[in-house]
Length: 171
Image (cartoon, rainbow, N blue to C red; front, side, top):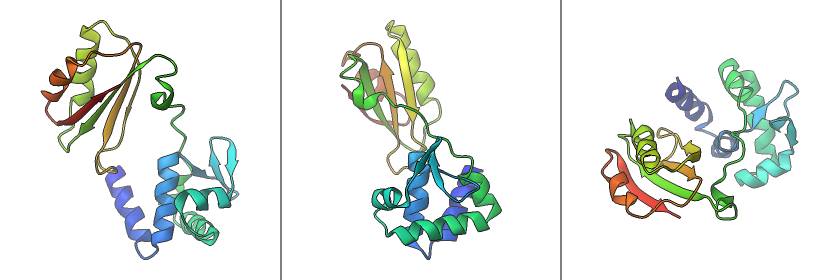
């Protein structure tokens, strides 16, 4: 379903690169369209100017994108249902003395999360958060795992043995 919807988004906006950038930015940031044709992040209203700046487009592209979304029932159902993912701990992990494992995955991504978390828990380390980028939407998707404590570098070789893992960073 997601692949079909992404194809529909690309098809609908292919003649309008600025509108496509707006739609992509809305999905990336978890922004939704409401019944009143306004853009929200959760219950926080986002100005057209702010989104235009983030998507690097003219403000008029925001209005025309929202209009196109509202005119298409499938797109409106998608964009009105988006919710923000919440706080990702990756950028503040160091301040909280948490560990970060970043794994770049290839197209063969089945089982990577399960195998990775199994290796971590076997070392007696608790996992605080896991976030996986969509392999269909990202060119080089990342699996980011936040742990209660730093993970030793000797696990890198173990992670690299997992089918589909392309690169591992621990910090």
